[in-house]
Length: 130
Image: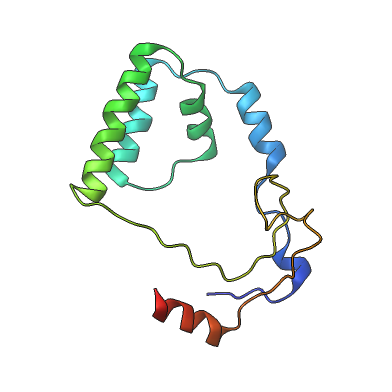
């Protein structure tokens, strides 16, 4: 695992906003068989889809296609979690952020927050608490 301690490197935007906007504007809606192929891939592999595939899923608005997506979402949820209830506990290692989400205290525009990145020892203690 590569740890990034350099502030400028750590704060680089890892999300290609221009690519996402372009895909959302220019992606054509999938036909039924193409949609089913993407959903089946997600079910079979249980791994992240490409940005192009996600853009196609986001573009869906036909009720028949949405029903297929709901069906696969339920199948994938059942495959991954079965009937368990899973609780996720976030582990914040830093409160540095380059985004400016208005609802978030970590946002880059919040000049009042004292920024901190946990040391490896502090991270270890947090994990033990969880």
